[in-house]
Amino acid sequence: MSVFIGKDRKARRAYGFDEIALVPGDITINPEEVDIKMPLGDMTLPIPFLASAMDGVVDPKFAIAMGKLGGLAVLNLEGIYTRYDDYETILEEISKATPEKATQLVQKLYVKPINEKLIAKRVREIKKAKVLCAVSAIPQRAERFGKIVEEAGADIFVVQSTVTTVRHIAKAYQVVDFKKLCRKMKIPVILGNCVTYKVALELAETGCAGLLVGIGPGSACTTRGVLGIGVPQVTAIADCAAAREFYYKKTGKYVSIIADGGMSTGGDICKSIASGADGVMVGSAFARTKEAPGRGFHWGMATPHANLPRGTRIHVGTTGTLEEILYGPARLDDGTQNLVGALRTSMGNVGAKNIREMQLTEIVIAPAIKTEGKLFQSAQKLGMCK
Image (cartoon, rainbow, N blue to C red; front, side, top):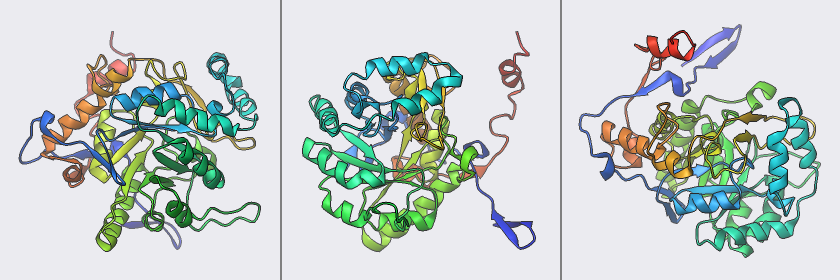
């Protein structure tokens, strides 16, 4: 439903994670007996968790650890891992920078040209551990980098930018033809990011295996503040999932929806799936792991932009191992650990046997869901209780 925001101007109401709640089901299921596998092209991931293609989150070692635990980590082909052979000293320099100098330092470090030999090297490092290898590039470099990673043995190619459309207009550079790219690539291609029904449908029609949904919701992303664009994640996921269903009924081809960004707790992840996602791409939660390369820091993919950075380095700290974040045991009560357990338990409580059933969960508008009856919790967070 739209409302007037001024003369002849209407706006549609959109919802974020904190404004909705999931309704318990008429039946409940043992959480250990629900199926959380995620389809992706001809593949199936054991758990529907992807780690964001951010340098503070995923390096080759993290990608291997994530793969061995059943998830999928995406390595950024345009980050420090393909610009510097010895990247440990670079990570150390970023982690020690003052908040005032962090963005400028990151901009400076990313000026060094990408070494294409390192692209293949990183892919081979990950594949040597016998896990799935996923890598990402921006659309302008997709065709060239796609060939390199395919030959090196990558399993999944992600083409990602702040806003991705099939009908991009540019005179300064060659616009990538996504249909041609998806047809030529012998491995599944994931495209993103998008937030609307129409764009999601047009991207699905390129032949991709998955879509990333989310513009600006990430904790290290400042796109919404800098550019003023974005759609709250619940509405964005639901709209894009509707496009997936239409395309599936029309063609029989299933394109997975991956919620990308804005999820800081297990509850947010459960709401993403219930809104229509098949899986989630998470950054900050994994940046907190002992295995993350950022040493307790996390910075957005657009932070290095030379003229208009749309990300910032944030301190997230280190709260546990990757296994604890994914599978527990949870040592914190804030919903940031045992994310797999949270999803299983939520699915059991709403009576969803699998991800597809979870997408049909009843949702209510509930802006008070996080504060209702939580007087003492709120006071404690504000330091009013001792």
